[in-house]
Image (cartoon, rainbow, N blue to C red):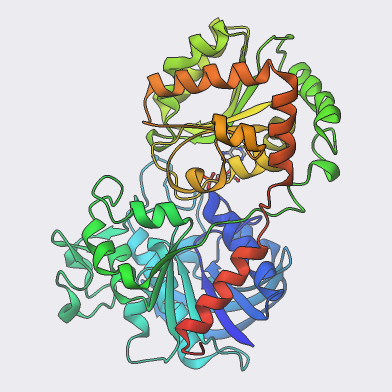
Length: 474
Ligand code: ADP
């Protein structure tokens, strides 16, 4: 049995800011089915420590970054957790990455360096007789792990890039404090324009790199999407692969919904749509009820949606949005809801409402400028909520555009648009409204989406095969 230590800064359902948490939470269960034992190392945020059952200290790490640290093992939400207990780093108010002022915690480099050092110690010494063959880290927060493993453990290191936009930059003056080897502070190591980049450290030191869709893997090697690391990605192309995320098909099952009206087919879905309209005080409409569940940031392209919103409304459509993020986007959407009866905007993070929106929505809009994989379009497919997406990253890999050929062959599942501009989005909205008014075509799109596999089976097998290859077994 392959033993893997997953190293993550967030993990659903315990602590989540985005899709990374969903993936970290789902992987262990999915991999168990293909013969891989995965334990998850994550920071000891209060929400994690409070959820731990059968908690026991399994390793004393001594002082790190100004306070005593230990590894506590336990179970929570069906996960086999190893938790880095470090109150001075992780037990604080505010979000897991941002302080009350909305800016990164100034000691984020120290906080996640400690996580990576803990991973290396577990790989070196093992806990309770368990030692990983592979350390599988996620994003920059796990990026330094490869540096700390060097010379200490034979465990292989794999890094998954969920979003290359976040680099985990620290000033060079922190080299000693982070326990990094100054000899590796150069352009083939973790140096990035005079600073330390935790992500680059991982990209350079990993035995294998993955990202969360095949298209994003290709995009990462281009200046447009590489965020300054495209050269590094091109240099590392030989170890890079794209493995699509799945979704938790038990938590996201329209037939077994506990948050929304459950349904098994497009006809029965209309009850969920009616319930959502009532809840959000949206009247009846000719056009589609479009939903968005998203972080409100530039990445997500929602400024393009604001530009095309009058057109959607003119076509008889409606918009229901749930999200939070940039103040100017929050304000602009709030204003749109105030002046348009066909628009409902909920600012905040609300898991239960997100289920009702995806169940009740007729279409889900994901106009992202870049999207490593994206999860909400997968929920949309499973729920017969037709995805309208930008042609990028995982959105390109998971939706089959309703072009004439795909419609004729009966395989389309949604709508894609490119280039990622307001004009192209407007044309896509027209196509959406046209299809929506043709009941037969619309139902066919919904049924195709609902039948599209969005679970973890294929991807779990791909990760297991990657682990085998990385361990030289195949
Ligand atoms: P990203 O990781 O870039 O935020 P993804 O689509 O990969 O984007 O994952 C986002 C996840 O967060 C999805 O599970 C989505 O349903 C959830 N989500 C985003 N915003 C909200 C919100 N305001 N309320 C509830 N869930 C949200």
